[in-house]
Image (cartoon, rainbow, N blue to C red; front, top):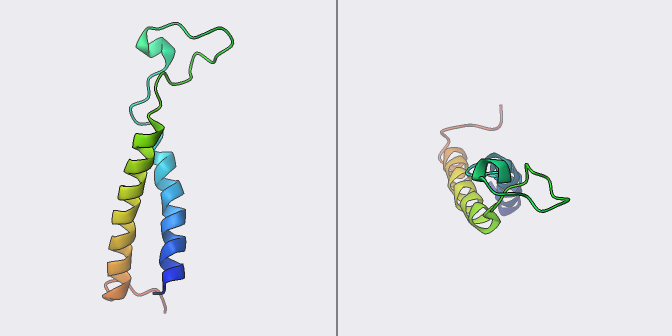
Length: 81
């Protein structure tokens, strides 16, 4: 497994994990009990915590990528027939 394969796997998994992590812990203005500013969507998150979610996404993706790399490198899973 070469570096290009691992980087592309990480990139694809990063986006998948990001979209799985984004809705976690989000409260809308209605759920938080605060009024949204005029013209804002009432379902928009009060505090989306994007930096924390990017960091969480990065380490979770690194762990998943490492597990897949180990499975392929040590022949626990064979990718070719």
